[in-house]
Amino acid sequence: MSNHGVQMRKIVLEEARAKGAPAGPGVHAYEFVAPLDEAGFINLEAWKKERVRCFVHRLEHGKIVERGLLVRRAGGVGGATWAFDYELGTTEDEEAGYRFGAHAFTPGEYVSIRDDEDELRTFKVISATSA
Image (tube, rainbow, N blue to C red; front, side, top):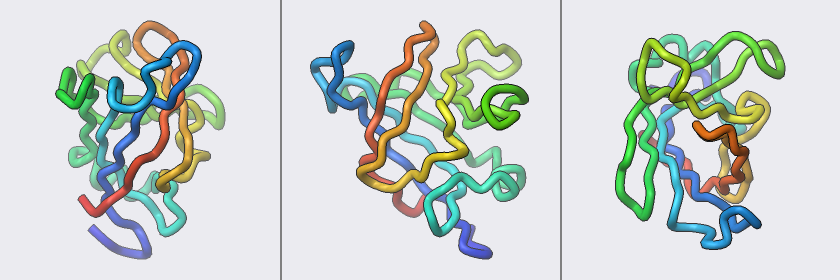
């Protein structure tokens, strides 16, 4: 989809090297599809139209360990939170993106995700290619 500068993108995130993740890239990663505007931000209106296409894969050592959807929930900073939902109908399995609405998903940028164990982890945007 491409209209008014919005394109569906496949975004790859790899965990950044950190105290809690000394192994760094290649161990934990995500691949997800989202509509991004020309600056690389998630476009809410396009997501509303294309949400069924906005899937996510959580990877460990390059293998898919969970499949889900990119969802938007009421509450959180700015009034809503983007999350990865692996079991629709429950919020217990969700992994929330920290301020995803305020971050550009362009290669080299960093974002944080609160995992299902409530730990905040930092990821580097590796790529954002046409989906």
